[in-house]
Image (cartoon, rainbow, N blue to C red; front, side, top):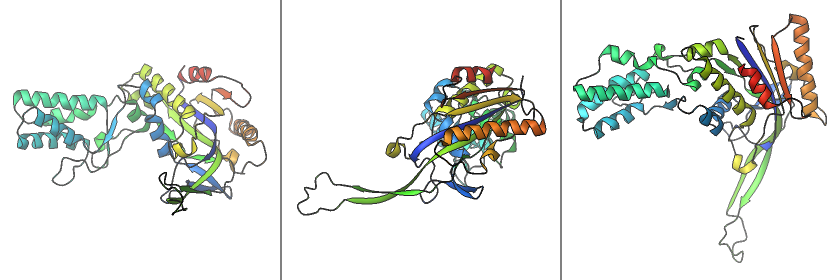
Length: 344
């Protein structure tokens, strides 16, 4: 089995504002002396794991990010006619296993990523406490966070400084997507008109606004440690393969949701290169240190990527054991073959 799976994607988006900064403008970064459009890894990962594609493929194996788990447990006990004092004590003890609580509250201070198995175990423990009319003991509480067979937690990890035993190292690393060429963020000036305004007294717009946008061809890089993923999933290699297949499909087909209603920025990856092996992983972003220019940016970017791939092999020796690619610009390869290669 190959330890590492690496994915290199080129995806073109028309005018859009996929991932906004604090001013509502598209996120950018300087690279190779040029301003580039950027999509943060946080934005990419959230949109992939919350997509219909991923959720339908991994139903029953996706965790929940929440601060409110203790409150949910408390409501459950009240509906079971447990008195408020006992309910609060029991839920406080359980919720503490998933993070430090706010003062005088059952709400966790930080967002806690809780697996379906952990949620189920917590409710089962509550049912036992109700039946035996007692508080939970330390052993019962410690077992709650030992059930973490959620693929999104296994892939992207979780961390709580207040509960180190709760932490899981991410098996998947995702780089910020970066445009392969320089960009200039432009402004879309728009107005909205009141439908009941007959134009006789007020000929002006009812609303005026601006929205930043830009178009770009993005390079994205993903690295999956398959051995760690299987370990995070308690040795379930079949579930790990399903998770990888679902993640790859989401990465290839699902764009960020930012301003989709305004720009309809739906795009599939135009080019995907997958690599497998035990060699130290490496990104190919250096291929675009010099911005791609010209009228055929997609073709030029693919050529740059493949040239850099071969150059690394020449200098360092083979950087992966096996490779598979698909090119939607030329119609070469297929997504089904790529998925089969990655999960084999």
